[in-house]
Image (cartoon, rainbow, N blue to C red; front, side):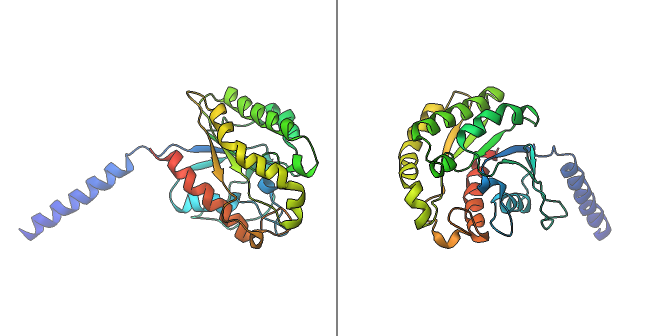
Length: 238
């Protein structure tokens, strides 16, 4: 009798394992990290959120593919025997106008993104003393180009993290206006098939998270990646 029970238990285990192996794999979500130097990073001088976000996603079983025309040349530790996905669309020093001018070329050469993480829109415009209204127009056009490329794309616009006290002497006007205008901006850009949303990177962010006046140190990169992760899992869940 005991032998019969053992055989039955073994059969159940084998059947369950086979059923699990035959389950369809979770679809891979293609994520485009878009922006300037905060996306690109330059370790050890300053850090991007990308590696820490990728690491947390992989550790928690999410299947993601970072895409973009740029490849991070730095070396990062493997996670679960996987090498870091180095692709991105971060261009140090680029203003919103420069991102807009090049966007068609970039997205034509990569897979279609499911999600775009648009970092610090207008940050370099502020540092270059460019008109706020032009930056807003450029951000709108960037989002709309992405929606033409994929009418079902989800786009996340940052309410960007502040710089230090010195940087904020330059950034403050842009920063305040972007924070105040973001909700109405995302409502304007939403379509019936494409969700545009904002993410608050400013609340709780302080100078201890900066490597220099505007870029993240490792703790700052973790702060940003955690915020993105918490939002992304709500977007990607079935």
